[in-house]
Length: 596
Ligand code: F6R
Image 1 (spheres, rainbow, N blue to C red):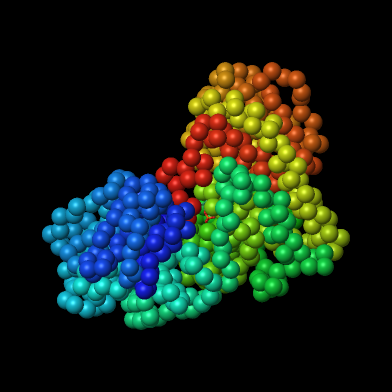
Image 2 (image 1 turned 180 degrees about the vertical axis):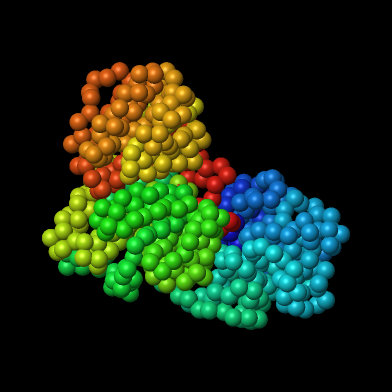
């Protein structure tokens, strides 16, 4: 979280960092700021609460060039106010920071430093200033020995105009040299051009001028092949809506990429079948929506590949002390490829010698680099904070993985493989007709938007869908939503059902039909309203008071997860829209969660 951008060049340093910053706004948007050298070689700092747009409106329109750094914030320490916005200054040092300085209180005491802001960052500026005797790299190197936590810093020294210093530990940082000058960014996709870029390794310190980048420490090179940019909202009211509507193509592209001559084939990613040899257990590790994609697909690994699966919340994985062993495969799912909790779990498994595979959307990211074995979702940039097309694509890749594992383990013959692929493709085909449910779902949303609490229920894979339904609704509509395994309702939560309280139920398996309908009846008996999403082949009662049925355009089975996903996304979107919420950038959230 937090985006940092920097530029040193002969022209337009300020406007260059402001436009770079706007491409990083997904990382945090509660406040923004910039620092730049003016024509007298003095550092100017401008900070605002709110979006980058506001900072751009406040900043002077002309700037002769030189060096500038900028920051978009997602608050961790200290409220959202101008005083806590970056850049933060102490003495001769002005810096921007992405990460968390864990020992900031201890350092404040050691240095007898009285901060102006409430942030954990300001002490880093004070520490570097206290160690500075004219050699910036030396001061930063000394400071690193005393800083605990994660950081990517871009630093200006008042007596070094035209130079940016930078370093990192855990948090991402990339550098690029072009004819116009030198860039630094939290995310290479914010660079203005494709081409080779540099990734400073942990604790490497770099000195960036218009003509050169000097490193003290190791720097690796990487290549940005494609500018992973969204081409705007293209007439849609929100990015989220655009991304929901892009799913038929995004999912098909993702799935078809790994279908070669009618078989699931991962050879283009160099994933050999031997990765699955002797696997007895799979651990799927991820956060939020990505974790729900793991949960939805768990059932497939059991039924198709005969492998037991546990889906873990990444932030719990380390604390819960999950064992790392030889006969397990650890699968990490991440759209952004840089979620800190997922990365920490990946590192733990790698340190324990476990077999690793990751499912990633964004290229060139840290989880991708550190995983080795990677399958990609091909959905293009996902801009809205609420994940939609990445979710269906992740489920698609997990479906393919289950089929490949089942074949490699001799659980599926050629005929079985064709049938499994056909049912996956039927699921892909159901996405476009599911989008056509939009008006019907909008009508449901107009009632749901008047509620305070909404309950989501389902069994097995439908419970995983319910978890995603509740998450999506609460993150963008701010209504309280809770997912409950349908069978668990009667063990406590049913006490919250009273007349008018809405519940949303998913039903895509005949095997669970009668039991889910029993839970539905129990809610109706207590005066609750149930919105039931059921596949077209499910026998459900019609004409009951307070039971609203929406038919998903799919037959029962694993592929139905795709149309169910679309329906819950549209329900959340329409509810939030009717409540007038800022759908693409909900309060307190950021697209990449890079703090643990
Ligand atoms: C919810 C959402 C988040 C992310 C989670 C993991 O709509 O987007 O819950 O799914 O933060 O992010 P990635 O997939 O980038 O690791």
